[in-house]
Length: 213
Length: 137
Image 1 (cartoon, helix red, strand yellow):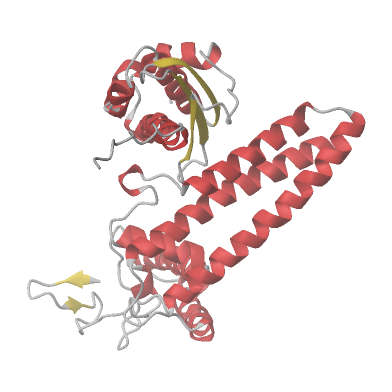
Image 2 (cartoon, rainbow over the protein chains, first blue to last red; image 1 turned 180 degrees about the horizontal axis):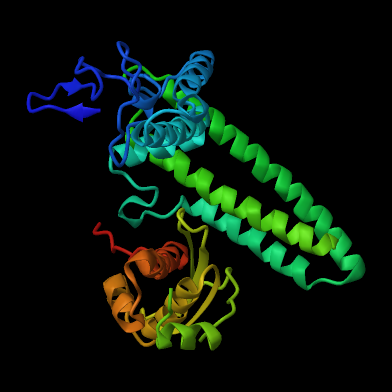
């Protein structure tokens, strides 16, 4: 999508005005900027509230139109545009269909990082995670019968953490439906907790797997 | 990413690892976590009645820089007054350990941790009794 001096975009193929990844008039795939807007790639408005059925439909439609199979006999430039566009379409779909990836992308679009101004997680959460890490440490060091009972305990903890993650995810999706869009700080807090608990869940699973071998 | 010699030193030979009893009235405990990396640190300070840090302990689950930051900070606080500890800046840790920009949050976490420990100590220590006011009759 080339931007002219007046800010309008012109199709490189037919010079028609174009706002989408594929020119509506001549079907030419438009070149993407280095960091394409993932909403625009699928022709969606920049909004967190996304209808999953609409997203699916747009993904399949756009994938088909830009698919490299259709450009096997086209010019090298068009083949390259097709590959770039297909990669962007896949990335957009993967990001927009997953509420957590979508939230993180939204923060990045607004220049906010998870650990913005190096804020830690809430103290109570840090204390719980510390406790679980100590149990994991004990389990890694344990032998025989001790290991069995610790393993059961850690298994129960794993369920708690997974349930909490599910709750946070539901809260996050609830924020997406807010009128006028969510407050960035609310999003950041939820996503920071989710990231923190996901790391913990990974540590729990790694410890349980190692012990099972 | 290459760790600095000081990070490697603190990581392979951490100072003051362990814990004090949380219930000891002289002990303040701070537990802090950073969302980006999943690290969690527990920092504990033993503080005398006149507000001087007598001893410190830490336990950290995290990367080498997080362990080194918490280890170094337990050394740094010993002998300092409570007010001096509250003024410690994470940049002192960054400088001492030559932490790269991506690991600055480890130093922030350690600095936040000791301050949380002081706050906990202040909250938990027995409040001085209200001075008895002689009532004029």
